[in-house]
Image (cartoon, rainbow, N blue to C red; front, side, top):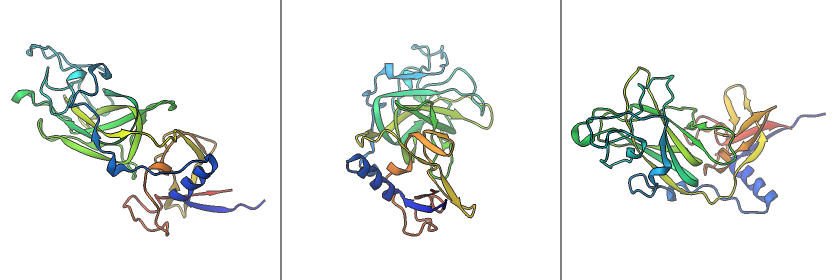
Length: 266
């Protein structure tokens, strides 16, 4: 039996998938999907903001740095969310925001604890995790180059935003403070995006291949499961809104050569 080498760009595969299912394939219009989802405004209610732990700030009348005080650009309570434990690479404290239903999340923002001038804590780096119905586990966000750690703050008052490229499809997100050395951290956050109306909740395909050991032609951001060379139960590059150059060796997006292409044997 002969093996045939097949190349597909993101848009070719999305088109084929749409034809099979009898619907239109529309990539994410991320530029139109950038509104604040409600941490600062209060549209996200207190009961949808939780955390692994929180620190008691007994010198504040409100008495704590609980999760509900993690609203960006808002000065209430202890001034931010602060986990009870000192954070380092192995300590997995988190702040969780429930978005109520599935959204496209295109950007996040973090801010330290200003505390009306009394705060001194902020988060220099953090990771973002997400979940939606159908996923078997929390997924750690990776950018197109495989980086997990996002840059946070350098002071207590200026907010630092991170555009998610690719965006994530999530109904819940977690902010996980990260540090190479033990430190006390606090966070206020905002989440940006829009309702997810594309309709694709998962797709399955072969894992993909590499060319000459250097050009990865796999779905590098697929967030489902991998078993026996087959991806299933998740979504990835087929809906990220990026289109491939006609030559897969051209790094048109600055995300490494071949990022927008898939290759597998049949």
